[in-house]
Image (cartoon, rainbow, N blue to C red):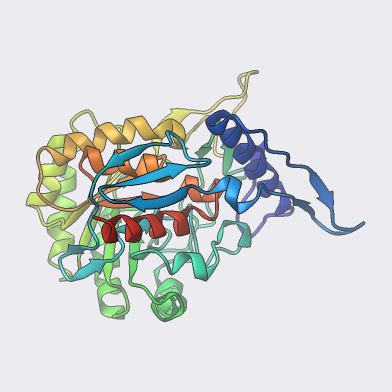
Length: 374
């Protein structure tokens, strides 16, 4: 079932139908407990609404207990293990407390399609909010549909960086830090030849607390340069000269030499690394037709990406000494712990929060609880 997103979305309930099915499958497989979800027609002309499982069934139960944290409920790999997490992580001038951010684009605050926005009360629990990627000129994105389900807790997408462009974003999104009450990291991408201009504009606007360079989008022409260490170093050297703000370089799991790319980025001025973006795949239906409007290719996110990006985090953490955002398939506390074990210092959530809008709150509570109990 395809997910249609953006301002042209004609049936917002469609996304929630897909999400409900994914949630139910995830809980049944993880906990062995059946979850009944049935559509309810709100009225002759009203949208289809879903009755979701109760909060107690969907969210991890977290209890501090001395040297460890007990985790139960619908969380992949429920466990009891002793460990310690950081109360805060500092990236240049930006303090992330808790060390938790959203993945750019998937979890939003300003989407024209409200189905992709999390409530401000949830987003405010993040250490910082990352905007969708901004380009020099407005982009409508790729043809619909932009996304489809790809197994349990997993999406394939090719949205194509839809955004209002740098002029509108710098004007209209200036309210975000005050509205959310947390720092805002602005993601910029698209034509790498324009990134230094974009960074200069973000810096001059004065309201951003950090910048993420999206060097690894597989769904736009020229968006995936993070596989080439020389290209990455060139981009970082240019943008570093444009700002004193913290710079996060977003890497790709598709690189054949991620350690080399990571070192090139850090040596050229990156303050932190986001590991990482979606994995480029070919997304075809059983009959061989393309699932997505942009054609047969797209990016994989969610649970199926988790093991891939865990390896990326571990590989990068072994060669650099800067904060690392572990992003990809974090659907609960156990997955966050695996990211920390691999070498991440900051946790990123994306597709997992699409499937479970309470995930941000659950992880934020967990980070606070685990620090207080160690």
